[in-house]
Length: 258
Image 1 (cartoon, helix red, strand yellow):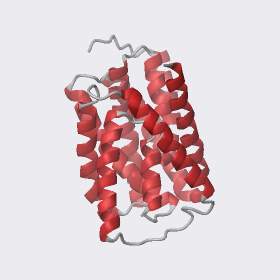
Image 2: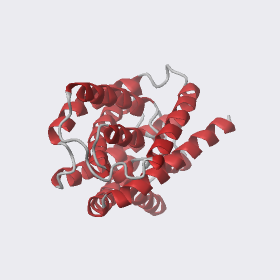
Image 3: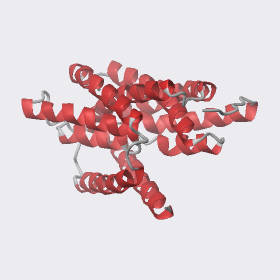
């Protein structure tokens, strides 16, 4: 797909600011695509190029977040390593079939699911303050495998709300908010790489924009993940609810716009 990419000083500054802001939020609860994808579209990129380019930058920020959470012990390492390949494969398949399924139907379903996630999380005031589980049983582990594959597919195919759904899933399994965010980031990184490779195979990436924004996403991810680890659930929970609410608003707006 053809696009004349120009990295002048104003574009570099724009990508830098967007990258920092996006990854600061995304490093904790996801939802950074709310900012970065419209920003890339604003630079004139067609939708497939904007999605693919965003995956490059987001994957760089996600990797940085994973390293931070991993080093702080806020990721269940063995479980994450088992689930990440499923997210990777699911996302690659999702990105491949993105043109085969009706996006409008997906939007309607996602709005309903995001509302359920937000209401349930809001009503459970102390949910995620403390871990309720150390080791997953057979049934919970099977659920985690299904979650990784299905949400990975969704991330490659559509994307908005992936971080929210993953965190909700890990909270439901009994993890605290910060560990749930760390686990979610590990799976989100794997699904992002799967989708990125699929977009790269189809030539739907502007590498100069993606890498430039990704460099600044690394710095935003360092700041955001450190803030989450230091502040804990008191910081992650309200940010999670805010981002999920914004996602709901964005999806409803786009449905009404049609």
